[in-house]
Image (cartoon, rainbow, N blue to C red; front, top):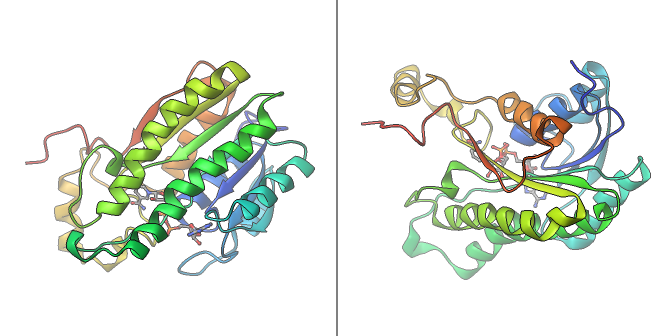
Length: 256
Ligand code: NAD
C-alpha cells in the first residue's frame, strides 16, 4: 500500500459493514486513521469487526464510535473523536438503508425513516464536518448510488434520497470550495454486500445478472474503497463537485 493518506484522519459512517467497511479498510491501508461510526460495531452477516481488521491488516489505525447518523448529537461525537485523533481531514457519509416497497404502500413514517438516515445523515454529517474543516481544509465524500441517476419503481424513497445526495454534493462543492473543502460523490452500482442480497441468487440468476454488466461481475466494497482513497488524496486535489460511477459500466451502457 501507499502513504497517500498518512497523517490524515477520517470518519466513515456505516463503516462496520459492506461498502463503508471497504472504504474504511482502503483508507487505513493507505495510512489514514479511521473513526468507524456506525449503529453497530459488528459487521452485518458476521465476521471480524472493521477496527480489528484495520489493526491486523493495515498501517493505519481504527476506532469505533457508536453513531446513528440520523442524530446530529451522534454525528458530533464521531467528528469529535476524529478531532481528538489529530483533526478531521476526510468525512465519508456512507451509512444508508434501502426499503423495497410498492410506491402506493409507503407511509409517512417509512419515508421519514429512510430520508432521515440517507439524506439528513449526509446533510448534517457534512455540515458538522465542514465546521471543523473550514480553517484547515479537508474533503467530504458522499456515497450515493446509480439510483441517483435512474428510477427503480420499487425503491422510490431510496431513489429520492440518492438523487438529492448527488445534487447536495454539487451545491456543497460550491459552498465549501472557497474554504478549501472538496466535496464529491461516489455512485456505486450493484455491490456485493448485505444490502444488495446477491447471496440469495442461484448461479443461473447470477450469470444472467452479470451478462448485463460490461465488466461481468458485481462490485466489491474494495472497488469503492479504492476510489474513495483517490478522492480523499492529493491526487484528486482539483476534483470537486464530481459524481463518480463505480458500477462496472452498467449505467451508461445498453443492457438490452
Ligand atoms: P450494508 O447494509 O451492507 O451496510 C450498511 C452499514 O450502515 C451497516 O454497518 C449498518 O449498521 C450501518 N447503518 C445503517 N443505518 C445506520 C445509521 N442510522 N447510522 C449509522 N450507521 C448505520 O449496506 P452497503 O451496501 O454497504 O451500503 C452502504 C452505502 O452504499 C449506502 O449508502 C448504500 O445506499 C450505498 N449503495 C450500496 C449499493 C449496493 O449494491 N450494495 C449500491 C449503491 C449504493
